Length: 155
Image (cartoon, rainbow, N blue to C red):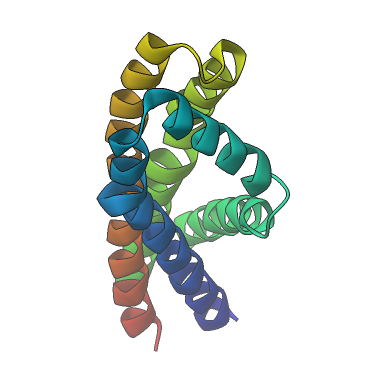
């Protein structure tokens, strides 16, 4: 069962890493390259659509699964696979989930309230949101590598 759950986290962290990587590597750059109002309007639309997409269930289910695997791994210490699962969970929960809730979502709310006409908010938003998104991408990728490492130790 632990192998299956770890595989699910490998898939989930890979999905998240890919999504965040896409935003960091070209989506935000494209949005910033158009006029501020157009980029802001597009980002506001993305933020509205993403809440009704498969992203949200994957985001929350993977967070719960990472937390569950982390708690379970604490009961199996000092096993090497457990230490790796704990590291993967901490990186995922702090770098993906907490960063999203503490930084990216409040920035999304700020942009939504300001609207696309506020160029100062958009330029500040784009720079800060992207910086935090880089961290989410890196954390998701690092957790993916750690979950793969834990899986090899579970076998």
